[in-house]
Length: 414
Image (cartoon, rainbow, N blue to C red; front, side, top):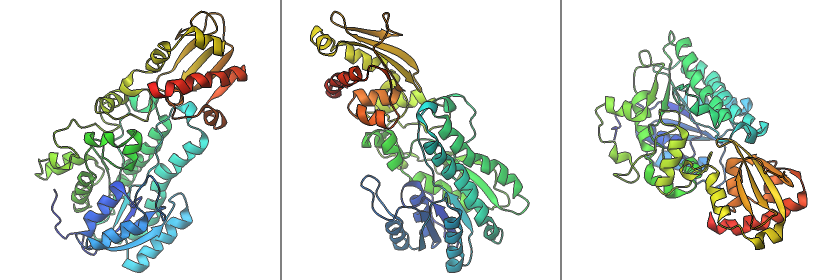
């Protein structure tokens, strides 16, 4: 791993979203140099699924040899950001480094991303990064080696990274565009502005969520590869090292660190490429599935699309099921695997297939493909899907309620 050299001793880092994951790993790396760390995050009470608070992280920073100021900050609030920056300056005398790490993610298509979710991502990722940079810059300009480091990807304009989750991509690229613009804007003043992104998936609470469980860990690297790469970047001369969209293992390799296997959760395993690089989303889903994980974003495991779910339904069709339901259903699916399907539970032993039903539908259901699969797999209750707006029903509502019986039978088979 990248050795601590003590260069950050006495330096003050303001890190957003540092109560866990990559942000906390960077905080601990700097703490081993004897740095001052400001943890700017929202988590003050333990979350049932996400470990760590700003206070537990602060204790780890101090145990590692640093000084820490935990600040309750929602980076959507200008008042809270300004208050935290003022407290940091009062306590430590200034700010030398800003790490824009906080981020919100929802890998959902346009029809599944309402304005509340859209605004959340835009306000945290793009606006939050801009706001923290704006407020910290007067103090960074007084530092001898000032750095802004955004945990954001290269600006890859490949349409594959837009089509399945355009809102998230726009929000995340907002962070990267801050790098593109501010690096040039503040180059004359000697403020370095760079981006850092992982080559592979990093095992954090967010990755566990997107991978559908901890099975994805064996395809990931540890957060320490990002903190080591960040350390290398933050200890460079800010006047000469700016405007870079860096990849973690490339940064380390350039420093003579060739053993990347040390950062793997499971040595020798096939690693999952991260988003926004040169592997498309379908390939990522396939690799996650091959490794035993269940992708919780766009499409189905293995990239099979809704066909996999309908194949399972096909095996269950019977005259008894037709007798108990007695209706024809059409499913208009949106998102990554946009398509139309029908299930005829009104005649014979039942039938299904792609397209609209030949004799018309009694009930038409419209929803995102991923939510459709969750609903038939038992992860999303039809009533909850309907009430939350994820499921839209046109036609016979009573018939829609009958279909729930089929969904209940489907759950253990998907």
